[in-house]
Image (tube, rainbow, N blue to C red; front, top):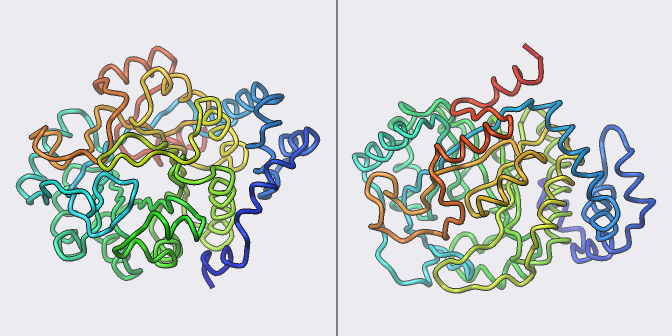
Length: 377
């Protein structure tokens, strides 16, 4: 059994009615509840009643929980894009095989150049990102890449195509600490509609990736949905259900959630269910209240002003000075970006903004720092 088997028994569209039917009493019950919460509780926290009548309460509670668990530390990570080569035909993605542009796969020497540039920015937490291409950007490539990057990274993450369990176990021996794999949407019909070809069109294969990561013993697994792609009520409730499943079956695995809202990209796909700033604030607080232990990440998709606003509410990991093009740190402007960066501030500017708000920017392994911040050591 896998999470795919469990969620396939459900009509996920019913999450709409679940969210819309939540009353003030349901919201108050979810806010007052100690210990493990249910999907019904989460639905109440993302409901319209919660936004209208309890958002101030939620923001205060979320901030208090975050300070108690993580202190004033914010983990700084940086994406390193290895390639924009991709065999998938995803209607919403700039790297889609449907878009015609020059494809790039970084060489080992180019990756080392990127790592040198990243080191000068102060980063030791690196997230490797790639399009999905098994032939030129698969395990043979990763076996060469990870030892090079690990020379520069105290904490190494990946956001690449789903792999086999034994592949993850091997990459762990090469220094891999964390993997994020976003389902994009949990709705089977819409998933098929926007994934037109390539291995990503296999919904089961993608959705079972966190199971394979858990069995392989990867330290931290990131899940999430692409906000705006499908109805957020459906996808966020499905994410909450996925988190509950992972907590039950892989209790040794740390979990993280990211909040990517759709941004302009090659191909011109428009969001079908846009998420406003107020809703995103609510969602961040909802996840923090739902699961106090989650790492919550926000990327440079969001504006500088908005990121400064939401970081204190529950965010524990941010990127700064990011590039979404392969080679974008050492040789900027030679390849297509996956999506347009919205917060274009330098690393120093973001760090200054964090410090002015009383936060410490952490550039190395966040796990140890979090334990120190929470008083465990």
